[in-house]
Image 1 (cartoon, rainbow, N blue to C red):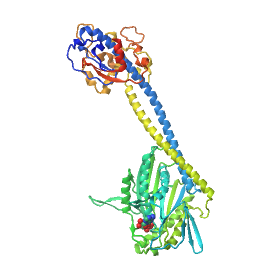
Image 2 (cartoon, protein in one colour):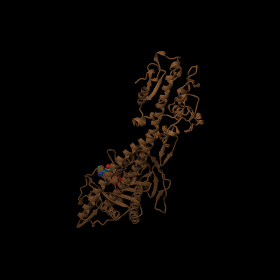
Image 3 (cartoon, rainbow, N blue to C red):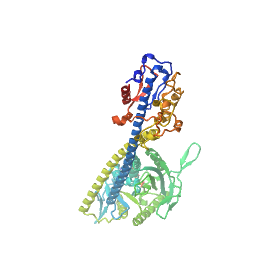
Length: 622
Ligand SMILES: Nc1ncnc2c1ncn2[C@@H]1O[C@H](COP(=O)(O)OP(=O)(O)OP(=O)(O)O)[C@@H](O)[C@H]1O
């Protein structure tokens, strides 16, 4: 819709008295710019009444804005309360999920341990084709039976992976314990077994059959990107236990200006505090922010690891390799786990019969050192079992081979597993107990799934609520620049609005509270310069001098002019009490102002941004 000059009580045939530059208007709704130079003398009274009605429109628009601001303020408070509720719901769901996961691990793991869970898996490698497996080994889902001449040995573990099991099968069982690490538990995944049985294969894998370490890195970064309840910082260290000493695999030493080498730092010391926290002095700990960075560091550490050729394995690990991922969980309002947790991924050196490996000299010494430390490991784990306060979860994957030659080592390895697991092999759970355990696990898994789905929904709701709060905050920021009486805090829009000072101008032109908006509007729109070009000489509508002023000068005086407030009781004609009927909110019940910039077709100097309602009402007035 285009406003015509007639809408303002002007006669278009008169044309402008003087040519004047068009005045750029701020885009703020309900602000009118008009250069009264363009008005012929005989139309000044018409202009006066038009200005009066425009003034009312401006004020009612401001009231609308004030109303919207108050509504926004209430609604922003409601959104903030909703956000608070969502956060609390998120915490509850997260706590539920963690609790269910802990219970699953407890049920699956060693039921005798309350806060710590040790689980033992067994991965079986198929026999070398050249060696026929004569040792009758039978494999069940959770049991391995070895029959020898007249004897039978049963070893119960938490899960057996047959030679056909894939890397995916293994990782699927490992995955839940990783969530525990993110939830604040210290977690250790160990690969144990005779040399050449596939420990490095399980932990590291090969390019098309990736093992636990790369999959774990990927999974951790995936999980932390999904978890909106906290923020995580990950760092990584690698060390090896070689010939009884600790070597830092990630230490960097520059050997020349152009290149640098990764030279393991040796003989690190282990420090342990009274509360059981173990730290390795001077161990390099590099921050990792994404999975690719983690892979790169791992590749460097691997490169520095000690390996040798033996009869049993072309690239036999001659040390225990430990990869540590430190997880710092921040903004953690959820109780339970520690804010810092450590995930250890350990590829142990292979236990070996020294004669069988054909090792001599230095390699023989390495083998002895490995065997010695492995026997110490058994003692350490047995001792740890007694320390119930330790908030850690251990998963040991024992590797065995079906080879005839390996029968003795297989029995040794499984005996070690039995010791770690500390569950009597012959104390099998009844079928009914197993069924009940499985039912519990299924129920808990269902709870976890529900909690995770719910968490996803809550996260989406939180995102939306956050967006709304931002939008409302922006509206309030603008609204706070309204006159004090209209600002949302004061509820002033309910009070009658009066002119705040007396000036020697016609009553309709007396400035109002809304005029203070001018400067702020100009700041907001960045068009204060445009406003300043308007002539601000005093107006004399009824005198002989030419009429040259900005309506805004009178509709919107500066703050200084408010130094002469007009009391409500002041009967002075200069105190302009505005008619409440101008408030469109009251008459139309419209909540949100809709504005449209209008340019007069007959006079391009006249640019107006008005509400549709205002335009309609103005024509009613004329
Ligand atoms: N499940 C498997 N599937 C396919 N290949 C395997 C499997 N397990 C092991 N291998 C292969 O057997 C060889 C020896 O495995 P690996 O080096 O992992 O043994 P290890 O237990 O780490 O030995 P060591 O203790 O001497 O380091 C490797 O070539 C590896 O690829």
